[in-house]
Image 1 (cartoon, rainbow, N blue to C red):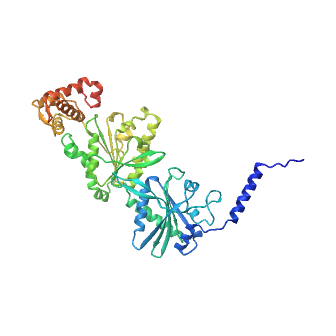
Image 2 (cartoon, rainbow, N blue to C red):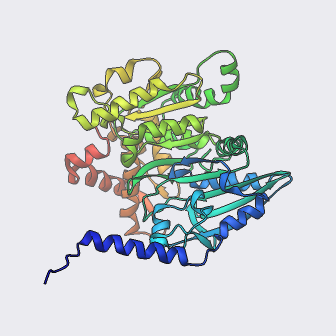
Length: 466
């Protein structure tokens, strides 16, 4: 007897035919969102144009803020519908085309997207504040006689969709494009990062914006030789104060300032002071994990100007090219290109610090337009060391009779050393008196521990050159 053969391909074809028959015999039901859209537009939306635009994940809060501002406009109203669906649809990302499909769009002919609760995700802003942002939602917007449908889809941490997508449906394509133009304008105007202290970093292959809170530094906390702080302020705060008049006079506003000097002399403290004084500026910190994002940081500065980009210890990436590896070269080249590439009327200040000006790339240190002025922050002279003793002695009871001897003994010491010396002396005194009373003996003991017991490395770390 002949044996009938039944291949895997035959089984697959028969099974597909069976599923097609089952789907065809199933009762048809109008998808819920197709019905919503028909009522909203008072017309069949299946032939309406859809215009979409993607935004970076870091702009989720800005998209939400812009959409909220639009729907709250005069003579406008909006209804927000939540969207849910099978795991496959949510993994791939629900689209407007799926919402208006006549048949189910789920896996194996299952149900497509259905109505559900509006999904939100909390986006962290400055401090402890958060902004709830729509993750999957359909806005049915009425603007007088004009009607729009706006699908907002946030990034899916578990899926392949890693951006914020806005799809706009309207009877006329021009109406959808007009909405997106309005959205982009509102995002720039209401940007949640404007005027804040931020940095960029890569997390799980995505670019994240991190907020920072800088310490408040007053001018009397900056101990520099006479006239030096005023020179720095003129190049930074002075430019900011007169920026409109300088631009009107045809003066370029893009500028670079390099603060250089031995470790511990106050370069970072001065940068923090300037950032605090320029309150209306967006401060962008180029830090360790964000050094590879120079291009995006500069683009952010351009969008959020007036801005300051602060890059500390630039010598770590801007040494002579012959001393670097390929990875450092890439960052250096990008930094140089971005400093050159920003238009001269962009109100951006590059504020760089270094302990090693001797090894800086000459093109970075000498070429106008990259660095316009280099200012040395020297080790404190005797007058400055005396002021540092008074500054870091605040809050302590002092019984120091040989201040002049202390000032002489600290020749070649940095401001960081003077601060640590006073802290160490207070620690010794705390073991003996309450309240703390610092005497000459405690200062001598602290000096010995830092300079003798601490060894060369401690001296180097604290910026002692003698």
